[in-house]
Length: 304
Image (cartoon, rainbow, N blue to C red):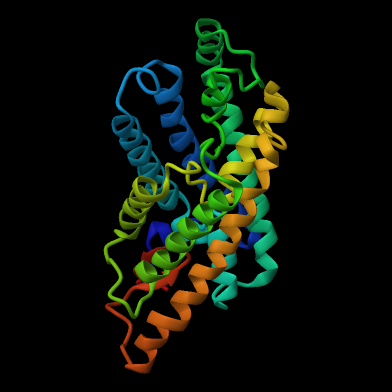
């Protein structure tokens, strides 16, 4: 007997294909950035962070905020698009043959647009806080300044390396952090590897992001996501941050793009040729009734 859910008809049939998936990536990434950059704004702009509290307190707030942001973003888009929310994750799935290459660029565009729109909304909501920060600290927008507070303000939107970290070190930090992210996502969603059931995968992935932030976040701000960095960086460029955003100090902008993409490929290849191949060689059957769909695990539709 058909239920009301079965009988419901979409008002937008075009969303049944790639447009619907792109919409999921757009909205999921937007939610990710709204909560992620939103918590950074609270720490950096309101005096509760960079000049008031110990570093570990500030960083714990940011790391937990980003972890929760990822969890919520994955829940938004998990069933619709697989909730990649990250070009490095998308290319990782494509490299493993679990995602069609024809959808890679549309996903990337949707992810960057979602991040840009989230940054635009945050700029609108926190504009008064930005102006207050600049007034109290004598900061000229788009200028690092001798005290570096111009960079503190810009960190609400995008990442910087620490002054004592070289370009090669920052690049390596992004590669390793993203390789861990993508490789462990595959470990979490691999149906042969005892994946979390009952739709708990987004929580586990959120804790994974917290762990990466606490372990690999200090050197370069752990972008580990080209869209997460470039979308807000582009908004900041138009909002008056100028060369401090693009190309950034020491032409840094390419590091959070190329580093995570390379890390995503490495993480995918290493997982596929080690753990996954070992599971296949041992003839480990899929666990439970879970179905691998992007970054989430969901139960198959009983009405299908």
